[in-house]
Amino acid sequence: MLTVYIPMDSVACAVGADDVAQRFAEEAARRGMALDIRRTSSRGLFWLEPLVEVDTPHGRAGFRTVTPEDVSGLLAIDMAAVRDHLLSIGLVDELPYLKSQQRLLFARAGLTRPLSLDDYLAAGGYQGLEKAAAMSGDDIVANVLDSGLRGRGGAAFPAGIKWRTVRQAGADSKYVVCNADEGDSGSFADRMLMEGDPFLLLEGMTIAGLAVGATRGYIYVRSEYAPAIAVLRQAIVIAREHGYLGDNVAHGGHDFDIEVREGAGAYICGEETSLLESLEGKRGTVRAKPPLPALQGLFGQPTLVHNVLSLASVPLILARGAAWYRNFGMGRSLGTMAFQLAGNVRRGGLVERAFGLTLRELVLDYGGGTASGRPLKAVQLGGPLGAWIPPSLLDTPLDYEALAAIGAMLGHGGAVLADDTVDMGRMARFAMRFCAIESCGKCTPCRIGSTRGVEVIDRLLAAGNAEEKSRQHALLDDLCLTMQHGSLCALGGMTPFPVQSALKYFPADFGLTSQENAQ
Image 1 (tube, one colour):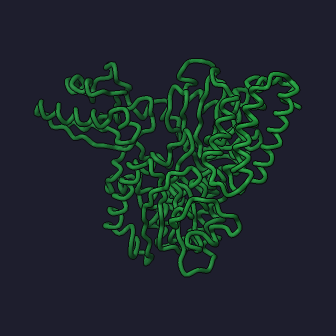
Image 2 (image 1 turned 30 degrees about the horizontal axis):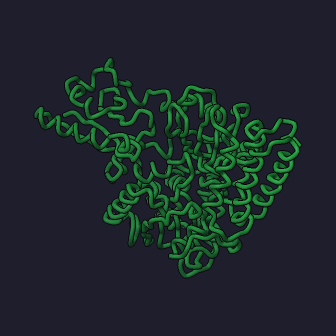
Image 3 (image 1 turned 90 degrees about the vertical axis):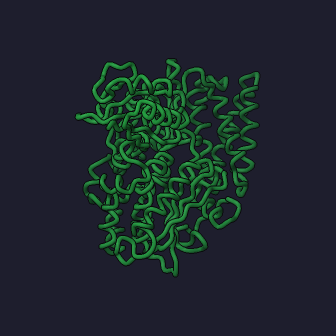
């Protein structure tokens, strides 16, 4: 029997994967052919989707961008043996894009069926939880501390310190909250993992619950991620039925359960305190800190808040050890990061590599440069509030400290490419306008500053003489400093990053000379 693997990832389905799967079933039935169609997670090679794979004695062979019209021709050949077909890409694991990666979080991507617990267990799933269930909470926390894991949501705070704080906090109840409100432009790793490997996230949250003494977890998923929400809810039922959630988890004497909550649709709810307000049924507005959520979080109780990739890293650390995990990365940036390529890029998709590869390797070697074929003008790293990085800085290592040294941030790992047709004056205006629309309105620098920022940029772009441009430029610089240092949260505090970087590296797009910009 021929086994055909077709992704059920949202990107693959958006370009016709469901129709391709249906056509395979219909065509096989018409031919009286035994065919096993398995809907898997995605490899993250989005420019090849829908990617259809078949088993061969040497591994899985792939066929790229398959359409329903291609199916009849594919079934007419020996898909496991033919390599000269127009759509054939050979052995998928041998593709340079994939072979050079170091996939830890996405080791099962494209290989397993998302809701098959058997597939997950066969690929090493729940080994971390089995070990954690036999350990004390202090020992679990020590493992996370020793691993050097830092939060993957953008702040890069040491995860183990946060875990220790929640564990040591005295309270009748504690919570674990997963921030899956993935709203940054160019970011899709959270969605990929939730849709494609949901048990990994559940396992990570359960280990976290055992470590800090929580009995309840919540996954806050943005409302636009309906397929991810559906997959997670089904996975929770399956995990509960097999003893991996609920009472006496993994026979370790601990109780822990998880609930999925649908987000309220606001970008600001990606900020942890605003998310907690939304979880409590309130309007998503930012809380002042202190108190920290680790001490007074959800419903006023100690709460461990992490994003998807942070929690998904934990099962590997427990299963293979902190020392093994520290072998990946550089400096204080340890482990791997799921980088995401989007925008005007030739090969968009997911790249998981240890920290330390350069931005040039990511966007040119993996991404292949711009899809338009025009010169690369800039890369925005870290979402809509990330700095614009010019080609002259592409050799910067993708490491938290190295990026901070050039005034940039890694954020959630999304990289958006722009070619030389993009007007950076308009992109700077967009950043301010985005902040004005998405602000929760609680603090003046963000609420009012962003609105004034749009007005100042408009005046700067429209100014007809050097003196007026210089005056508006100085006013914009002053406003950016006020927002950066006076805003209550990162939305207002980081909006100046794309504005200031656009001014610094692309002054001509504002009608400024390099000398005027330096002033």
